[in-house]
Length: 416
Ligand code: FAD
Ligand code: PYC
Image 1 (cartoon, helix red, strand yellow):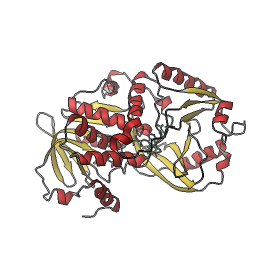
Image 2 (cartoon, helix red, strand yellow):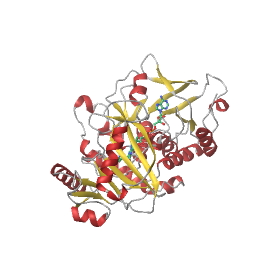
Image 3 (cartoon, rainbow, N blue to C red):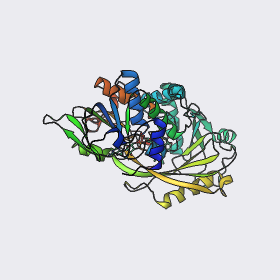
């Protein structure tokens, strides 16, 4: 049996043993109270809150790769809550609130930095849409303000506000409480804290099936290493949620797409905030190490391949250079992709399923990193109480049959 260097390192850090030492038999008798499928920030965070807030410690998080190796470790860390609808304001703002104290809560520096997120408007439709968002946000107590073209330049001097670019800047919406964090620290922080209070994290162990009793309730998961029993199972397997839910016989309204990002060589501080532009399919920030962190829109075709199309990156870099001519000679160090699962209304699905004992957290699409502490907290609540919290109740699966969609396409901020 082989283990990657990363997973051995992960185990060393969390004090966890690998599967064979933990479960010498192929068919362990171990019965967990809760199994969470997927050791991303959401799954690990839910395990932490189950143990910490509700005293449910007999929990296993089962991961096919290494912890934090999915989208949690691949994203560009934009955290904001400037969504349009009341339901979204409540769920994303709950998360931003939790980000605030997370480093202290976990005793692990998540490097949350409220440097502001500026969303650029390039046409009259953008202007109207962003101003509508600003009004809606304010009514919900979420900070967001309109900047004129000149205000944008004053806030971000390297921005080209001339008529030269294909998409001239007409203004922008700025949320100052928004910002960035360090992506994998969230997974590590939750993993260490959960592990310290009794949660098992089992890596290199893909879930391959969900077993159900004759009356339909879940009884456990089939994995590459054998069957593991539990009467409650939560699936938090971003990008692959539809595949895992199909194991229980459920069809989910999700499509999976590659989403790409890249980073440059490090340079001295030059970007004071995050800048996003849905119209040009590009966004950019600067990490504390000095690298420019640049993200693209999703690929145009569905795929589970963790690499995206080159022309998407070319288009993104072209747009970045138009908005910021100063970056034309920067060299890019690396690029990568993650698989995001997208719902028809671009809002997540977080709650119970029609199957007894089966819970789901998926469909965060291009925007679930910001939601990590909030989604984790609400998933733990839903599992512990066997009913959703009022914040996630609107995000249930049956909104797609009942028609109560929460259409956040315009607030997604990343081109799909
Ligand atoms: P993940 O971290 O993906 O964890 C899910 C885990 O499930 C994975 O580790 C996977 O291996 C595991 N898994 C899957 N199938 C199985 C199985 N059968 N058995 C066991 N385990 C399984 N969001 C933002 O808010 N801001 C951003 O700036 C942002 N930028 C992004 C940039 C990129 C390039 C990408 C790809 C995504 C971005 N996102 C962003 C989205 C964000 O990354 C995700 O929504 C979020 O990280 C999802 O977290 P998670 O814990 O649910 O999923
Ligand atoms: O949801 O803010 C976001 C985001 C930024 C980059 C990718 N997603």
